[in-house]
Length: 218
Image 1 (cartoon, rainbow, N blue to C red):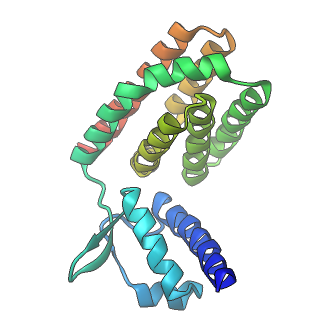
Image 2 (tube, rainbow, N blue to C red):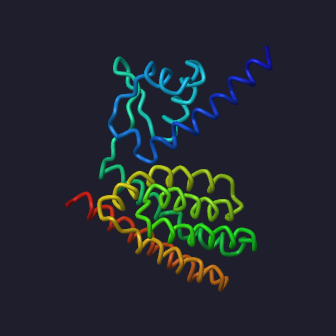
C-alpha cells in the first residue's frame, strides 16, 4: 500500500512540474478553463495525481479551482501583477544583501551561465528560454539567502511574475534590458557590496514593473 502511495506521489510531482511548465510558458493560455479529460487523453496522466497537481498549482496562484466551473488557468491581471511587484519590493532588497554574503563560487558560475545562455536565446528571439533562465537566475539568488522561508516566498513571487515577463518580452520582442540588469546585479554581487546589491536589485524589480505595466497598457 505504501509503495502505491509513493508511486502516486512521484507521479503527481512529475505532472505538477510538466503542467507548471505549460502554464509558465503560456502554452496553456491564461484564463483558459482546463479540461481534466483532455489533459488525461493528451498526456496520459492519471486522474488522481493530476488532481493533486491541480491543488498544488492552485496554492502557487497559477490555477484557480472554481466550484461548478472547474479548473481555470489564473488570468494575467495587471492588478495581480502590481500586488506581486509590491510584495517583491518589500523583500527583494534584503534578500539581495543576504545572497551577497552567502553566494558560493558555484552559485556565481550558475548566475553567469544563465546570463550567457540568456544572451544566446535573445539572439534567436527565444523568449520562452529567456523566461526559464530568468527564473533560474532568481532561484539561485533565493537559495543563496540560506533562509528557507524567504526562499519559498521569493520563488512563489517569481513564478507568478514569470508569465507577465514572458508576455511582455514576446510583445516587445526585446529582453535586452533585463539581461543587462542581470549583468549589473552580478557585478555588484562580485564586489560583495551588500548596499550596491540591494540597490541594483531594487532598480531591476522596479524597471521590470514599469516595462510590464507599459506593455499591458499599450
